[in-house]
Amino acid sequence: MSLVFEPQVSLKAFNTFGVDVRAQVFAQAHSDADVREALAYCAQQQLPLLVIGGGSNLLLTADIPALVLRMATQGIRILSDDGVQVIVEAEAGEAWHPFVLWTLAQGLSGLENLSLIPGTVGAAPMQNIGAYGVEIKDVFAGLTALDRESGELRDFDLHACRFGYRDSLFKQQPGRWLILRVRFALSRVEHLHLGYGPVSQRLAQLGIAQPNASDVSQAICSIRSEKLPDPAVLGNAGSFFKNPLVPAALVAELKVDYPDLVAYPQADGQMKLAAGWLIERAGWKGFREADAGVHRLQALVLVNYGGATGLQLLNLAQRIQQDIAQRFKVQLEMEPNRY
Ligand code: FAD
Ligand code: NAP
Image (tube, rainbow, N blue to C red; front, side):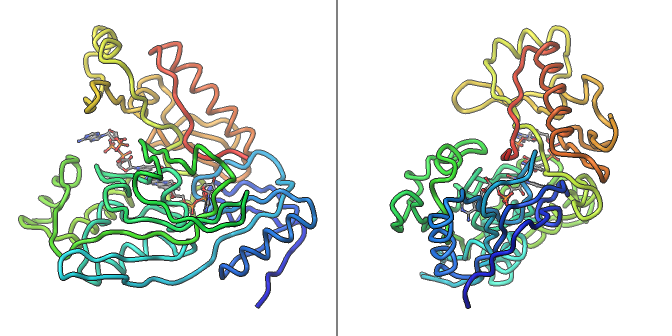
């Protein structure tokens, strides 16, 4: 089946902020052949290409003068199983959370802390998705990407991906690599990560003294469902700012005025500040102007009450950045990819 190219398509349903901009041309890829057809179309039409997955980490500020290609490839397979370690491969268009549930149903642990993150498998390496003390780099076994410059396929190992805190080579070289499929090293022996307070608290509330990976997944799903707005109800892209990494000396200085400042020591000697704490302390939690706002329960999440434009959301984000820089001498970095 060849690709269907649709002109002037609204992207409102294809980004979780629910921002209403148009793609000059829109198509959905169901196979590697579709991806190659899209690249050929762009070359022939001299049109840029923007690849998207679930649209849950996008801020679209204007109509997109490009072919917007949504990855919809499907397929999950076990590549090897030595009785303990199992290598699983999933196609880029697989939805992330159902994939996590599939791994748990096979008795495989490793992805449970990353439950209920929206989006697709193919986008997960872009910012090395992370939650509750686990990042995909911790269970990463490789990926296959198409080099859009040369048209060749390339396999990446852990080192080659240059994963960092919400960062990767793919984010640093925007538009070059089209991720086709990702491999994960999962385990039949559980090594649970319960270091984030809310997870062990929720398990205790549920009366689970010896949790398994599925228990952890369920606890995290229940915490997230209470705390984070559901994009189907209230438009958002999750955390809008990364948690800033700052020198320990700045933390000591800030603690004089803010003794309850939340800061976590990092292996390299820096400190990680909770951006949500800074924004809440600056008084932005629950702020709303027209249809752009800051979520009333989680100050790190910007929300679209319905009719906000990408530029209104961007403007709000910039005002928050300026305020935080002035108050705390900390520069917040936006997390969503802006187009
Ligand atoms: P998109 O938003 O569609 O795309 C993101 C970027 O990746 C874009 O630059 C796009 O061009 C590129 N891209 C997409 N697919 C491909 C591909 N196959 N090849 C190459 N480039 C590609 N993130 C976390 O890290 N941790 C969280 O806990 C978390 N929680 C969230 C909670 C909510 C409620 C929401 C709305 C978002 C959350 N996010 C979180 C952010 C987001 O869900 C993740 O970053 C997710 O991986 C984005 O996937 P996506 O398919 O929606 O990507
Ligand atoms: P939280 O539990 O309120 O904690 C606030 C921040 O403190 C988190 O961002 C987290 O940093 C940090 N933190 C908490 N406990 C920590 C510990 N034991 N060690 C080191 N750092 C710690 O956070 P939340 O907003 O409800 O989110 C829970 C988890 O889901 C976090 O890991 C968060 O990153 C993730 N999440 C991400 C997004 C997104 O869009 N990127 C959206 C929602 C939730 P880290 O963020 O570095 O983990």
